Length: 86
Image (cartoon, rainbow, N blue to C red; front, side):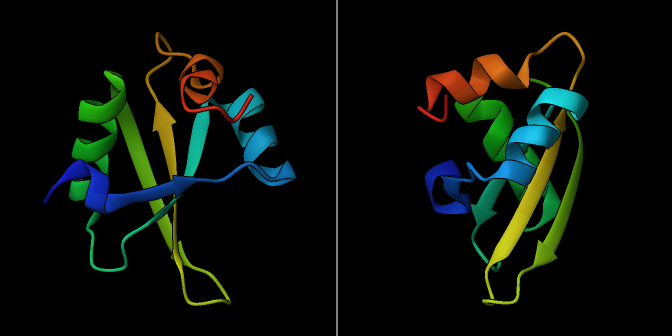
């Protein structure tokens, strides 16, 4: 699966900001038919970081949200600044 088809857009809300600062996690809305493995591979190839864990959930609106924990040597703040969240 193409990484640009898997990752639809990053989230910039208050909870996403707290996760980014405290737990080194990035939050995205992803394609509904993408797997955790697809999400991990897409993030690693798009942003050149190492992903430790991926958590997914379906929101009330029916969208699929993914919280991606990065390796401690990679900064979620720095990655977020590359795609314009900060």
